[in-house]
Amino acid sequence: KLQIVAGSFVLFSLFYHFEPFNYFAFMSQEKAKAFRSKPLVDVDPKCLLYVHQREFAATTPADKCVSVIGSDDATTCHLVVLRHTGSGAVCLGHCDGSSTWSEVPLLVKAVTSLSDACKEGRLELHLVGGFNDDSTTSHNLSLDILAAFQVQKEDIHLETCCITEMNDVVVNGTHRPVVYGIGVDVKTGDVYPASFPHKGPAEELRSARTFTGGEMVNIYDSSRGLFQIGPCTWSQNLDIAFWLSQNDDTILKYLSTSPRAEPPHFVQHMKSTIQFLLDHPNSESLFPGGQPQFYHRTETGDWERVVQS
Image (cartoon, rainbow, N blue to C red; front, side):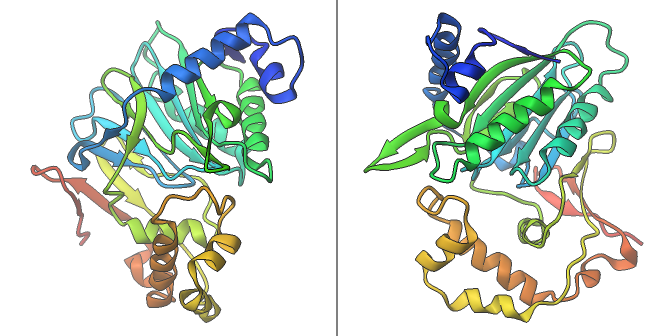
């Protein structure tokens, strides 16, 4: 069950607009405001495990390959961090509302399976993302995520709730998220606003997987320190070449859930993903023998593909 820190009335006050606006909701807004005011951290890729849309990853403080898990580019999407305070096991997922009710149990299991031997501690939840978008996509996703955690059998304590209305700012008359990305320190559990210049490994492949309808997937084996992706499947579709000749406004209008709030690199990212799909019409060629692509962290901190014999 979900335990709401700083008062359960926050759900009603902020999402159902019940009055009066009580003290507990005020305190939750204050916590969200404090989170938004934290300095933005530009995360070093040499310690990072980056999570793309419809991906999640989990590890423990014993991991010698990863010290930060992070994700960004979340407009209507929500970034979910779940951590066990006893074991230190932590998971970050990037949820877009495609299948929230089946995704939340995956995140919970990822943490509890790494915490089985731990008798002390509790599960703590941090939610960041969304804004007051015209289509209320963020609002609906916020409610779905909260409801999905509420029905879990585990006691889960909501520590950070910086979502939708509590993550909204108006810039030149346009609503936008305040925080687009977060990182979580694997050793300490600290969660903070973050940006990521490097989103690898296999950034274009992972984006293509999501673009073609891939479901939420675990990308990391913490027991071996291996990043993994695939095998993915998609059908050849030459019609998508149409988008490469379209202007930015058209791409934003039809390929984004929040055209006026996307980061500056959104259009180029979409074009690169489409070009990757055109260059690789047969996904099977990317996964010899039907096996995933694996990457390990080198001594210099880079992700390097493991060549399988």
